[in-house]
Amino acid sequence: MKDVALVLSSGSARGLAHIGVIEELEARGYRITSVAGCSMGALVGGIYAAGKLKEYREWMKGINRRQMLELVDFSLSLNHLVKGERIIEAIMKIVPDIDIENLPIPYCAIATDWAAGKEIVFRKGSLFQAIRASISLPSFFNPVRRDNMILIDGGITNPLPLNRVERKEGDLLVGADVSGYVHEERNELQQKQKSSRPRKGGRRFSRLSQIIIDKLTPENLDINYFTLLSRSSSIMLRQNACLMTELTRPDILIDIELKDIDSFDYDKSEKIIAVGREYARKALERYDNANNGGQT
Image (cartoon, rainbow, N blue to C red; front, side, top):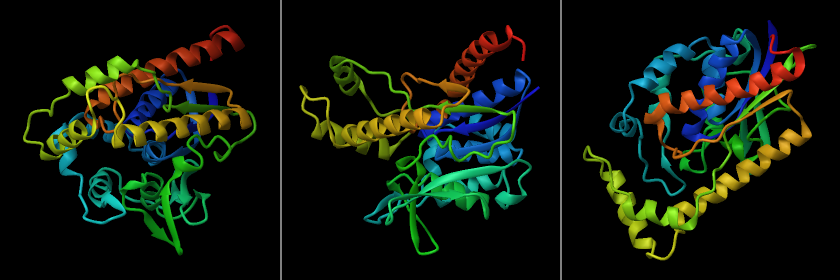
């Protein structure tokens, strides 16, 4: 059995692939002895460290898009769209809050100090306060205010915190990165927008967002406010994650690409988890074959 220091990247709904990574590691006999995570990676990693990942997966499996939208507590604030309290309260019914220092394995979460522009590492205190700060996507979630700081998503400063996980002699440093982006041709993007329709179920928010996109996007243009900001964020996260793998090289990098998965496709958890597990299987097989003939 080989010990693993596991690092999980940011990535919104794509971060659910980290569940598949953890399951594959354990199925192949690896023992996760510490975890560091950013944004969605902080959430999945924290729930795993608390010993509740199976319960969280089952809960996510039963969530449909309508139920997910019911967990979105919209705000009229000028600096965020969603308060972010309702989703945390729902998860806390499955995973009671605990101080990080009392978790069974070492854990840390990454957030960003908005005013100072620097990385903040949570290694003690409330698990869910750390997670809530780490997932505070700018302009979407309400920032977390703590110790005279305004805290936003950790992906801004360190989306794959390989340099922050607690290590011990002889362990393997394993990073799982879901920031990979599969390029689509311009005409494919246009076709997606033209064919896009709100899903059934009386989802007023989906209809409203589609109307706005249609109004802002001429037929010959595949760029609008939403796609421009979303793609810019994806590029930044990917570049920062790649830079971190150069600065702190992992023993195993599980680089996951998720096609046709949007940032808020949380209702596709089983599909996303399966993709994460498949990428983990391939990466671990390559490592095993290269180092000890396929034996862990």
